[in-house]
Amino acid sequence: MTGPPVALVGDGALVPCVGGTQRPYLSLDAAASTACLPSVHRRVDEFVPWYSSIHRGAGYKSQFATAAYEDARRAAMAFAGRAGRDDVAIICRNTTEALNHLAYRLRLAPDDVVVTTVVEHHANLLPWARVATRRYIECGADGTFSVEAVEAALDEQPHPRLLAVTGASNITGWLPPIEAIIGAAHRRGIPVALDAAQLAPHRPMPEDADFVAWSGHKMYAPFGAGVLVGPRQAFSAGDPFLAGGGAVDLVDLDEVVWTDPPDREEAGSPNVIGAVALHAAMDALGDVGWPSLVDHDRRLARLLRSGLASIPGVRLLGPSLEVETLPVAAFTVDDTPHALVAARLAAEDAIGVRHGCFCAHPYLVRLLGLPQADVVAYRDDVRRGDRSRMPGAVRASAGINTTEADVERLLAAVARIASGEEPPIEYRRDPHTGDFGPDPAAAPWNLDLGSHGSWCSPG
Image (cartoon, rainbow, N blue to C red; front, side, top):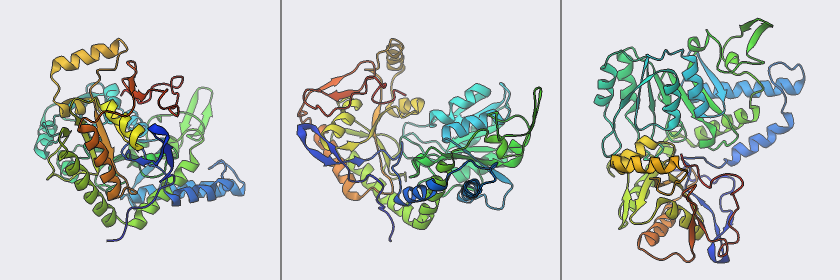
């Protein structure tokens, strides 16, 4: 089957490593953010000379930009399987903003129940806590839950107003049986909000979800645009999430008449270039085709997860190898802090991975099987500004550009670290961030981020 890997802008760039060498950079952090597809880069370059304000300009460039922006909106509707339905696509910054937007617009009361899961990214946990009461679906030690567990949570009283669930875990790559879950919710008259941030670049969207949110920066369009899709009627009454120009028909000093959705939901000057880039990315994935993308994912996921599980001293988190996942793997190395593993992979092998809690603290705590006493202890440390004992793991995640040779390169580097081989230089830990970095005397190329914040997000 033809298809991936597809090279991305910046692939093969040489980066400095310890010992004064340079090596081709290998990004295995697609679950966090992806580089740009060449076709996306070209589309943006072609559009930039024609950029202008949209919707309210009579000039040719304004009309051209407006058409491009609205074409992107229609493409997002089609990508989500909503063509021909009375839904709207709201273009926003990212999935986090989209879910916050939705939480505000559903006009939930504090005693309304939103059912969600312990597997969720913080973006699908924290917004609901602001507006409603959350009811959780627990996971097992392998990080999965069943449709029956979902049904049990939905059947509890009071009757839920919403089910908010991920389409794919950003830590383990696990794919919940989302079609069956949506069906279970709909049979009970409960709408579903789907966090599709991880799912969108890898699998077709489930067409029956009521609300879907995803981000361009995880699907090869890193220009700051995301999408919230949902029924028009959900946005046709009440005030929008953001108030300002473009969202109104009439304004007086003490009165406002909001315009119709989706414009009502997009106050201010929108990210037209981000929308154009997202459109190009959706077109590119469509050109490759889901069968090729899925086949590529499955091959890499098997190689990545089975390879890590076979390395002595490495613990693979999440479901068993028999369970299908995206090409995402979280792991720990015995007797080596997760931050040090990530630092060594970067400094010695030019491999970029993610480490920490991956903005999904409740899920990671469960995957690691941490006793409550340990959780209390590290939280006390964090409140004192010391993150050196923060639990975490290392995550490697592949994308459309990842090859089997790339995965083998990672596995060899992890095996070397897990074998107990001493690092070639000294690494120092910053207790405030919890991160390790090469001794600057041994690695003068080390970037000075002290004035810009921590190396990695603690959350």
